[in-house]
Amino acid sequence: MTETITNRHGDEIRIGQLWTDDPRRTSRRTLRVDGFDDAGQLGARVVCTVIRSHDTDTGQVTEPGRVVSIKADSLHTTAAGRGYRLAAVDDPRPSR
Image (cartoon, rainbow, N blue to C red; front, side, top):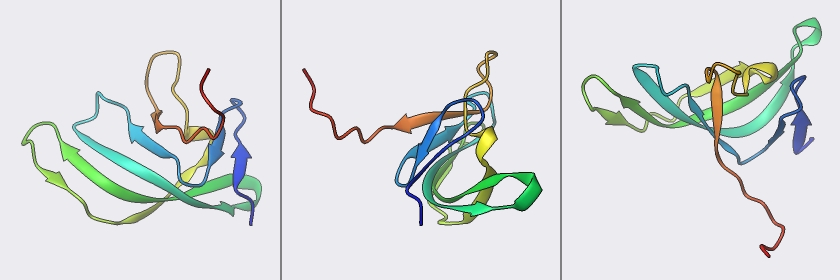
């Protein structure tokens, strides 16, 4: 199984990365990349586990563990700031 894919926007998506929903959403999730699926003509899908969910209206925080599938091309931040944001990068290169 592949450990990394690159979407059409040039974003490298790797297993173990954490992504968050657009901050303007009422319910914001933190997603962990667990793997990839091929959806044929629909393109690659990223299989993620919701590791945390935060409702900005109520302040309620949950850790549901629900598994979701998202189009790989959706995992990026648009010019308007919408979409998903990479929350954590596990860069193995040493810092200078």
